[in-house]
Image 1 (tube, rainbow, N blue to C red):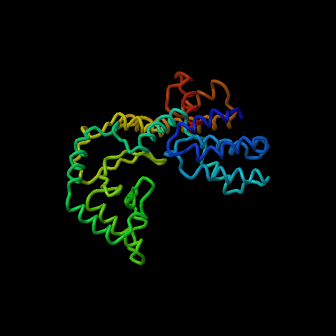
Image 2 (cartoon, helix red, strand yellow):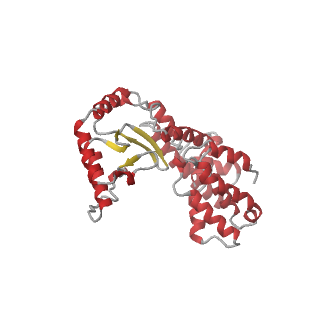
Image 3 (tube, one colour):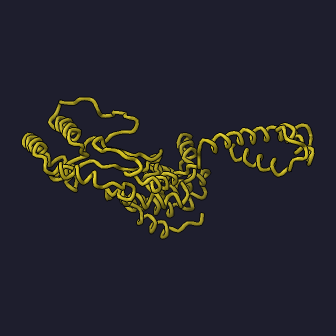
Length: 320
């Protein structure tokens, strides 16, 4: 394959979430094992995985770096990929196109900084509630009691942040089970209740962190989170055009009440045309006769342009 390690490492440096540290060593291993990979029976799948290492983290459906490390380890030892691993790589398919990665990669830098200003328009709502929260004597009293009973420093991340348990899509509640067996477990239960009471996603060095509207791309779609304190006005609060641009990087095609039904009808017609084309071939028909047989099956006049049949056949084959 014609790939440049330097160019790919430079690209990794442009991605958020310490991707150079995560994926850089794996890319280097690919180049060290290049000849072994080329000689492997599943070389195409292994090289397709290489390109996934350059995809923004928001589009990773699984730990791609972990998968690649495992695949390269087996390749280095001269071992075959087991059937389950081959199936995983086949199902994963090719990496998203560069244009989609550029859109997602650029936005990830804003997410990493907690900056959603480009997608959220009404910042005054957040500012008002944040100011009220900063003056809340009730919150300060509650947090003071918690700090008195628990060593909260042990729960802080490097930036001094303690985070609550994250919400999940479709309201799945993994980790919701009540646990009062240890001091740490008790703190976690209490801290989640504190964050619920004051609409927080965490506390940083004793300062409450108010939740805000967030727009986050995931491998499976785009999640928009609206805090319960927020009085929502979709047209005024959200930048629909920019959210659409971000979401369409997933590869969504244009849809609508007229477009979708007509496209489904065309696909059904394309499948019918391909079926008629194959049947005409089995009957020994060739040339114009074969095209006329398809037109008849579609209920179109025999003098219709054959180019319409050709387009339908191309579409049907692209669906298979």
